[in-house]
Image (cartoon, rainbow, N blue to C red; front, side):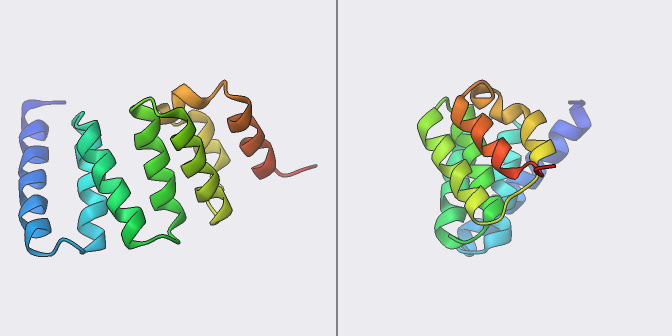
Length: 124
């Protein structure tokens, strides 16, 4: 990350944190902060925001997918798989991305992960 982009990202984080303090239930800000925290390596903070987003929007498949990614990055395999199952049950179906998403690396050899992928692949 270049010095400028690192500075820009830090500015964004500080800006969104200020908005979040004023409006802690602003769903879009919670999601943005989760992604930004993860991008800069603040995995625990990203996980906190992803958990909050799932509480705010329990039927949001992408929120559950992002939570699964954060949990996997924190090496919480069973919780990550549970959240991934929930994301899929709510309609998350981007198999190609799931297979290449580096955040899910810790799960890729897990039989349950492979089973989830098999459920999503078109049966031809």
